[in-house]
Length: 118
View (cartoon, rainbow, N blue to C red):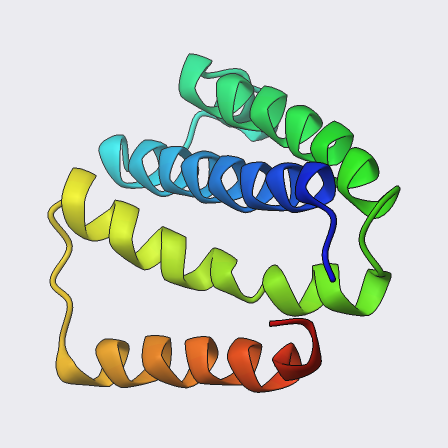
């Protein structure tokens, strides 16, 4: 059985990763000009996204205190699902049947991998 506290931090880690990756996608598509190595990485959205990744690291450590490593990394496959959902909702990206099929395969894989924990 997966302890509740560990599951909370695992889900938090997955959601924060999706938020951060969506911010990075948004920032990359927003301004196509190249400002140099330092200039591109010091834009406010990029700095915020990396700050969220620091929170993801903390949340991951807290989750791994209670969840087995193999279970946690199986759950992190859901990061792709979260990014697709956030990109569709917030960035208005098109979700085609190929993407939907890929998401379903990921969800099925996570479910099969964790059958003994469900």
